[in-house]
Length: 164
Image (cartoon, rainbow, N blue to C red; front, side):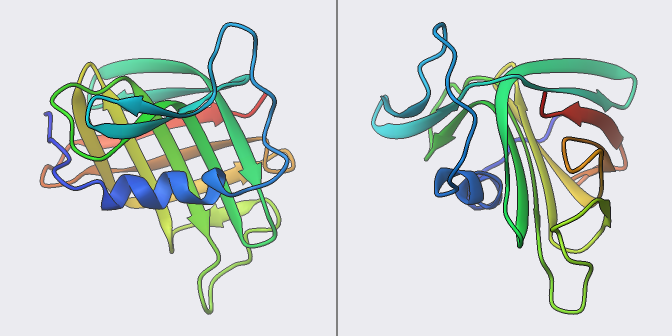
């Protein structure tokens, strides 16, 4: 059921829109948001009220403590800490990114997106890349659902998230 993510390029698609977005949620006192050294590489920690419930096959995971960023051309949800490089151990992280696609629906409003939708999870040091992702944004792009399957597996993945 587990599939390690060997390259950070997929996760970079998730994190990059937020790394440069303005208006991200302020960090809470207990969370140290921002870019930090992580061994020989860097990591980016996200703080805030965002949370997600992820179902991988019959297993359920809840992740909390992140933020959402919305622009006219993108939506990004990042929860936890993403390692920006290769590291033997990685903290928990969950991310969803939807980018405007040529000929696709604009991301500046609620809707269901199948083009340029990326979902990734790192949980208990195992990486999960979700392919064939469908992301539905609701409530003014403050909530949503997602579904897809694990890269290299037939295991179905689904869940929900909230930016609040």
